[in-house]
Image (cartoon, rainbow, N blue to C red):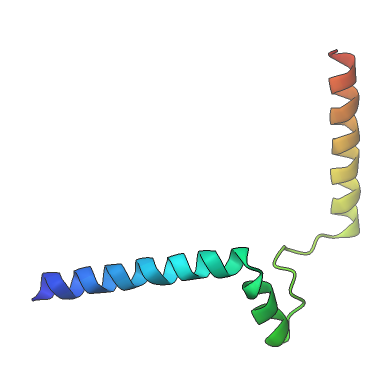
Length: 69
C-alpha cells in the first residue's frame, strides 16, 4: 500500500513536470509571469558593467577565431 502511494506520487510528479515543460515551450509560462505582475522575462537581469564585460568577451573571442583561421 505504501509502495503504491509512492508510485502514484512519482507518476503525478512526472505528469506535472511534463505539463510544465509543454507549457514553457508554448509560451504559457511567460504569460503566467506577466499575469502575476512580473515582466515575463525569465532571465536574470544583468548590470551594465556585466553587459559590457560580456560584449568585450564576445569581441575578443571573435578576434581569436579570425586569427586562428
